[in-house]
Length: 294
Image 1 (tube, helix red, strand yellow):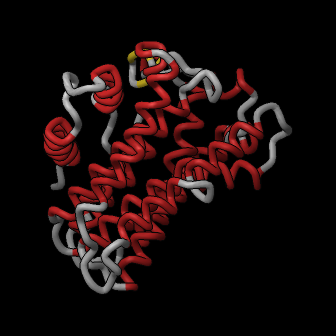
Image 2 (cartoon, one colour):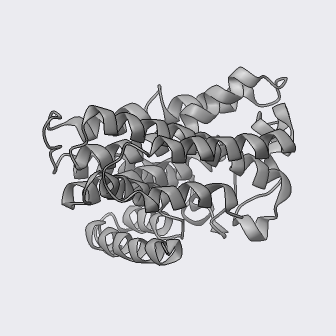
Protein backbone atom coordinates (compact mmCIF):
# COMPACT_ATOMS: atom_id res chain seq x y z
CA UNK A 1 0.00 0.00 0.00
CA UNK A 2 1.33 3.43 -0.95
CA UNK A 3 2.50 5.46 2.08
CA UNK A 4 1.89 9.10 1.18
CA UNK A 5 3.32 10.49 4.42
CA UNK A 6 6.61 8.65 3.90
CA UNK A 7 6.68 9.88 0.29
CA UNK A 8 6.09 13.47 1.42
CA UNK A 9 8.62 13.33 4.25
CA UNK A 10 11.33 11.87 2.03
CA UNK A 11 10.82 14.42 -0.74
CA UNK A 12 10.55 17.35 1.65
CA UNK A 13 13.90 16.39 3.15
CA UNK A 14 15.53 16.13 -0.28
CA UNK A 15 14.06 19.45 -1.41
CA UNK A 16 15.01 21.31 1.77
CA UNK A 17 18.57 19.98 1.66
CA UNK A 18 18.98 21.08 -1.95
CA UNK A 19 17.44 24.50 -1.29
CA UNK A 20 19.78 25.03 1.66
CA UNK A 21 22.75 24.14 -0.52
CA UNK A 22 21.75 26.29 -3.48
CA UNK A 23 20.43 29.46 -1.87
CA UNK A 24 22.93 32.19 -0.99
CA UNK A 25 24.20 31.94 2.60
CA UNK A 26 22.87 34.38 5.19
CA UNK A 27 26.39 35.72 5.63
CA UNK A 28 26.89 36.50 1.93
CA UNK A 29 26.59 40.19 1.12
CA UNK A 30 23.94 41.69 1.03
CA UNK A 31 23.36 39.68 4.18
CA UNK A 32 20.02 41.28 5.12
CA UNK A 33 18.57 40.36 1.73
CA UNK A 34 19.86 36.80 1.74
CA UNK A 35 18.66 36.31 5.32
CA UNK A 36 15.20 37.51 4.27
CA UNK A 37 15.13 35.13 1.30
CA UNK A 38 16.07 32.17 3.44
CA UNK A 39 13.63 33.13 6.18
CA UNK A 40 10.67 32.77 3.85
CA UNK A 41 11.94 29.72 1.98
CA UNK A 42 12.53 27.83 5.24
CA UNK A 43 9.50 29.11 7.16
CA UNK A 44 7.77 25.76 6.68
CA UNK A 45 5.38 24.84 3.94
CA UNK A 46 4.06 21.71 2.30
CA UNK A 47 6.47 21.74 -0.70
CA UNK A 48 3.44 20.56 -2.67
CA UNK A 49 4.40 22.14 -5.99
CA UNK A 50 7.93 20.68 -6.24
CA UNK A 51 6.62 17.32 -5.05
CA UNK A 52 3.96 17.39 -7.77
CA UNK A 53 6.69 18.13 -10.31
CA UNK A 54 8.71 15.10 -9.17
CA UNK A 55 5.62 12.87 -8.97
CA UNK A 56 4.66 13.85 -12.52
CA UNK A 57 8.11 12.91 -13.81
CA UNK A 58 7.77 9.58 -11.98
CA UNK A 59 4.37 9.00 -13.59
CA UNK A 60 5.97 9.39 -17.02
CA UNK A 61 8.96 7.21 -16.27
CA UNK A 62 11.46 8.40 -13.72
CA UNK A 63 12.30 11.63 -11.93
CA UNK A 64 15.70 12.99 -12.99
CA UNK A 65 18.07 15.85 -12.24
CA UNK A 66 16.28 18.13 -14.69
CA UNK A 67 12.94 17.53 -12.97
CA UNK A 68 14.57 18.14 -9.58
CA UNK A 69 16.04 21.48 -10.65
CA UNK A 70 12.67 22.47 -12.09
CA UNK A 71 11.01 21.50 -8.80
CA UNK A 72 13.39 23.74 -6.83
CA UNK A 73 12.75 26.65 -9.19
CA UNK A 74 9.00 26.23 -8.80
CA UNK A 75 9.26 26.30 -5.02
CA UNK A 76 11.27 29.51 -4.76
CA UNK A 77 9.01 31.21 -7.28
CA UNK A 78 6.02 30.12 -5.20
CA UNK A 79 7.72 31.59 -2.12
CA UNK A 80 8.10 34.92 -3.91
CA UNK A 81 4.36 34.96 -4.64
CA UNK A 82 3.57 34.41 -0.96
CA UNK A 83 5.94 37.18 0.17
CA UNK A 84 4.34 39.68 -2.19
CA UNK A 85 0.80 38.45 -1.48
CA UNK A 86 1.33 39.21 2.23
CA UNK A 87 2.58 42.79 1.70
CA UNK A 88 0.67 45.72 3.23
CA UNK A 89 -0.24 46.91 -0.26
CA UNK A 90 -1.70 43.49 -1.11
CA UNK A 91 -3.41 41.33 1.56
CA UNK A 92 -1.54 42.88 4.49
CA UNK A 93 -1.16 39.58 6.34
CA UNK A 94 0.96 39.31 9.47
CA UNK A 95 1.04 35.50 9.76
CA UNK A 96 2.19 32.87 7.27
CA UNK A 97 2.91 29.19 8.01
CA UNK A 98 2.51 29.94 11.71
CA UNK A 99 5.23 32.60 11.72
CA UNK A 100 5.34 36.37 11.23
CA UNK A 101 5.30 37.33 7.57
CA UNK A 102 8.51 38.59 6.04
CA UNK A 103 7.59 42.28 5.92
CA UNK A 104 6.91 42.12 9.67
CA UNK A 105 10.33 40.55 10.33
CA UNK A 106 12.55 42.28 7.78
CA UNK A 107 10.59 45.38 6.73
CA UNK A 108 8.55 45.99 3.63
CA UNK A 109 11.45 47.04 1.39
CA UNK A 110 13.48 43.93 2.16
CA UNK A 111 10.38 41.77 1.66
CA UNK A 112 9.84 43.23 -1.81
CA UNK A 113 13.50 42.77 -2.70
CA UNK A 114 13.58 39.21 -1.35
CA UNK A 115 10.56 38.33 -3.51
CA UNK A 116 12.19 39.93 -6.54
CA UNK A 117 15.43 38.03 -5.91
CA UNK A 118 13.68 34.66 -5.52
CA UNK A 119 11.68 35.22 -8.71
CA UNK A 120 14.86 35.99 -10.62
CA UNK A 121 16.77 33.11 -9.07
CA UNK A 122 14.07 30.66 -10.16
CA UNK A 123 14.77 31.47 -13.80
CA UNK A 124 18.53 31.43 -13.22
CA UNK A 125 18.22 27.83 -12.03
CA UNK A 126 16.00 26.88 -14.96
CA UNK A 127 18.54 28.40 -17.35
CA UNK A 128 21.01 25.76 -16.14
CA UNK A 129 18.98 22.84 -17.50
CA UNK A 130 17.58 21.86 -20.89
CA UNK A 131 14.30 20.15 -21.57
CA UNK A 132 14.78 16.84 -23.42
CA UNK A 133 13.41 16.09 -26.90
CA UNK A 134 10.80 16.52 -28.28
CA UNK A 135 10.81 19.89 -26.48
CA UNK A 136 12.95 22.93 -27.24
CA UNK A 137 15.72 23.36 -24.65
CA UNK A 138 14.05 26.42 -23.08
CA UNK A 139 10.61 24.83 -22.60
CA UNK A 140 10.82 24.61 -18.81
CA UNK A 141 11.51 28.33 -18.48
CA UNK A 142 8.66 29.08 -20.87
CA UNK A 143 6.26 26.99 -18.83
CA UNK A 144 7.08 28.74 -15.58
CA UNK A 145 7.10 32.21 -17.11
CA UNK A 146 3.69 31.70 -18.67
CA UNK A 147 2.26 30.43 -15.39
CA UNK A 148 3.76 33.26 -13.33
CA UNK A 149 3.08 36.42 -15.38
CA UNK A 150 0.13 38.64 -16.18
CA UNK A 151 -1.67 35.72 -17.82
CA UNK A 152 -1.06 33.57 -14.74
CA UNK A 153 -0.34 34.19 -11.06
CA UNK A 154 0.24 37.94 -11.30
CA UNK A 155 -2.90 38.41 -13.37
CA UNK A 156 -4.90 36.36 -10.87
CA UNK A 157 -3.61 38.49 -8.00
CA UNK A 158 -4.54 41.67 -9.84
CA UNK A 159 -8.10 40.43 -10.40
CA UNK A 160 -8.31 39.22 -6.79
CA UNK A 161 -7.45 42.68 -5.48
CA UNK A 162 -9.81 44.37 -7.93
CA UNK A 163 -12.69 42.09 -6.91
CA UNK A 164 -12.55 42.92 -3.19
CA UNK A 165 -15.87 44.30 -2.01
CA UNK A 166 -17.63 43.70 -5.32
CA UNK A 167 -20.79 41.58 -5.65
CA UNK A 168 -20.11 37.86 -5.94
CA UNK A 169 -19.60 36.75 -9.54
CA UNK A 170 -18.95 33.11 -10.58
CA UNK A 171 -16.94 34.02 -13.69
CA UNK A 172 -14.62 36.30 -11.73
CA UNK A 173 -14.03 33.70 -9.03
CA UNK A 174 -13.23 31.09 -11.68
CA UNK A 175 -10.77 33.45 -13.38
CA UNK A 176 -9.03 34.27 -10.08
CA UNK A 177 -8.77 30.62 -9.05
CA UNK A 178 -7.48 29.44 -12.43
CA UNK A 179 -4.81 32.12 -12.61
CA UNK A 180 -3.73 32.95 -9.07
CA UNK A 181 -3.54 29.34 -7.85
CA UNK A 182 -4.22 26.68 -10.48
CA UNK A 183 -1.76 28.08 -13.04
CA UNK A 184 1.30 27.27 -10.92
CA UNK A 185 0.01 23.85 -9.84
CA UNK A 186 -0.72 23.04 -13.48
CA UNK A 187 2.78 24.21 -14.46
CA UNK A 188 4.31 22.05 -11.72
CA UNK A 189 2.96 18.81 -13.16
CA UNK A 190 3.55 19.88 -16.75
CA UNK A 191 7.18 20.74 -15.99
CA UNK A 192 7.69 17.35 -14.37
CA UNK A 193 6.27 15.69 -17.46
CA UNK A 194 8.35 17.81 -19.82
CA UNK A 195 11.53 17.09 -17.84
CA UNK A 196 10.80 13.37 -18.24
CA UNK A 197 10.16 13.69 -22.00
CA UNK A 198 6.37 13.17 -21.95
CA UNK A 199 4.70 12.73 -25.33
CA UNK A 200 1.66 14.80 -26.36
CA UNK A 201 -0.88 12.33 -24.98
CA UNK A 202 0.70 12.01 -21.57
CA UNK A 203 1.39 15.73 -21.27
CA UNK A 204 -2.29 16.39 -22.05
CA UNK A 205 -3.23 13.97 -19.26
CA UNK A 206 -0.95 15.75 -16.80
CA UNK A 207 -2.38 19.10 -17.89
CA UNK A 208 -5.94 17.93 -17.20
CA UNK A 209 -4.83 16.59 -13.82
CA UNK A 210 -3.07 19.86 -12.96
CA UNK A 211 -6.08 21.98 -13.94
CA UNK A 212 -8.38 19.90 -11.77
CA UNK A 213 -6.21 19.75 -8.65
CA UNK A 214 -5.33 23.43 -9.02
CA UNK A 215 -8.98 24.45 -8.79
CA UNK A 216 -9.67 21.90 -6.05
CA UNK A 217 -6.76 23.22 -4.00
CA UNK A 218 -8.04 26.78 -4.05
CA UNK A 219 -11.62 25.77 -3.31
CA UNK A 220 -10.38 23.86 -0.27
CA UNK A 221 -8.38 26.94 0.76
CA UNK A 222 -11.61 28.96 0.53
CA UNK A 223 -13.41 26.39 2.68
CA UNK A 224 -10.65 26.30 5.30
CA UNK A 225 -10.47 30.09 5.50
CA UNK A 226 -14.18 30.08 6.29
CA UNK A 227 -14.28 27.13 8.71
CA UNK A 228 -10.86 26.67 10.34
CA UNK A 229 -8.72 28.60 12.82
CA UNK A 230 -5.50 30.55 12.54
CA UNK A 231 -3.79 28.05 14.85
CA UNK A 232 -4.62 25.20 12.47
CA UNK A 233 -3.96 27.05 9.22
CA UNK A 234 -0.81 28.87 10.29
CA UNK A 235 -2.28 32.05 8.79
CA UNK A 236 -5.30 34.26 9.28
CA UNK A 237 -8.70 32.53 9.24
CA UNK A 238 -11.93 34.28 8.32
CA UNK A 239 -9.93 36.97 6.53
CA UNK A 240 -11.56 36.39 3.13
CA UNK A 241 -14.99 37.41 4.42
CA UNK A 242 -13.59 40.31 6.45
CA UNK A 243 -11.87 41.75 3.38
CA UNK A 244 -14.82 41.15 1.08
CA UNK A 245 -12.82 38.64 -0.97
CA UNK A 246 -14.62 36.91 -3.80
CA UNK A 247 -14.30 33.16 -3.13
CA UNK A 248 -16.01 29.96 -4.20
CA UNK A 249 -17.67 29.80 -0.80
CA UNK A 250 -19.08 33.34 -0.95
CA UNK A 251 -20.45 32.70 -4.44
CA UNK A 252 -21.72 29.11 -4.15
CA UNK A 253 -21.81 28.25 -0.42
CA UNK A 254 -19.97 25.66 1.65
CA UNK A 255 -21.91 22.58 0.54
CA UNK A 256 -21.43 23.35 -3.14
CA UNK A 257 -17.74 24.11 -2.55
CA UNK A 258 -17.16 20.74 -0.89
CA UNK A 259 -18.97 18.90 -3.67
CA UNK A 260 -17.07 20.77 -6.40
CA UNK A 261 -13.72 19.97 -4.75
CA UNK A 262 -14.67 16.30 -4.54
CA UNK A 263 -15.74 16.22 -8.19
CA UNK A 264 -12.54 17.90 -9.34
CA UNK A 265 -10.47 15.39 -7.40
CA UNK A 266 -12.19 12.49 -9.11
CA UNK A 267 -11.68 14.20 -12.48
CA UNK A 268 -7.99 14.61 -11.71
CA UNK A 269 -7.54 10.95 -10.82
CA UNK A 270 -9.42 9.82 -13.91
CA UNK A 271 -7.14 11.97 -16.08
CA UNK A 272 -4.10 9.94 -14.96
CA UNK A 273 -5.13 6.75 -16.74
CA UNK A 274 -2.94 7.21 -19.87
CA UNK A 275 0.26 7.71 -17.85
CA UNK A 276 2.78 4.88 -18.29
CA UNK A 277 4.65 5.15 -14.97
CA UNK A 278 3.79 5.06 -11.27
CA UNK A 279 0.52 6.97 -10.79
CA UNK A 280 0.15 6.27 -7.06
CA UNK A 281 1.84 9.46 -5.79
CA UNK A 282 -0.27 11.74 -8.00
CA UNK A 283 -3.44 9.86 -7.07
CA UNK A 284 -2.68 10.10 -3.35
CA UNK A 285 -1.75 13.78 -3.63
CA UNK A 286 -5.06 14.57 -5.32
CA UNK A 287 -6.97 12.94 -2.48
CA UNK A 288 -4.79 14.65 0.14
CA UNK A 289 -5.59 18.07 -1.33
CA UNK A 290 -9.28 17.79 -0.42
CA UNK A 291 -8.69 16.00 2.89
CA UNK A 292 -6.09 18.43 4.27
CA UNK A 293 -6.79 20.67 7.25
CA UNK A 294 -4.15 23.33 6.54
